[in-house]
Image (spheres, helix red, strand yellow):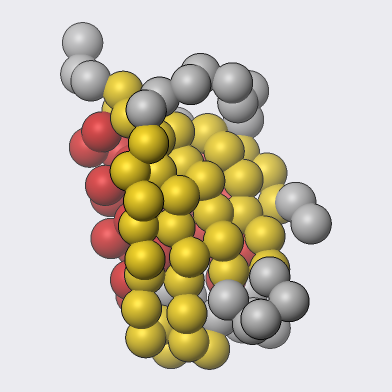
Length: 93
């Protein structure tokens, strides 16, 4: 079995009002990644991902591009230990 991992990401750029959270949810669900995504008051998007290392890495790579209307300028990633505390992936506030 592949190693499990966690990551927290803060995505900067034009990432609010462009369906970033909804498309992140779709990508995470497609890969079986759990956690959450939310808009932050400073205009960035924050997300926590947990799952197999290759799937979490793939979702983070997707975040560097984002949906078509977005313009990502930075993805700051903090790797974490896998906690197993998430049942699914959701958009939160």
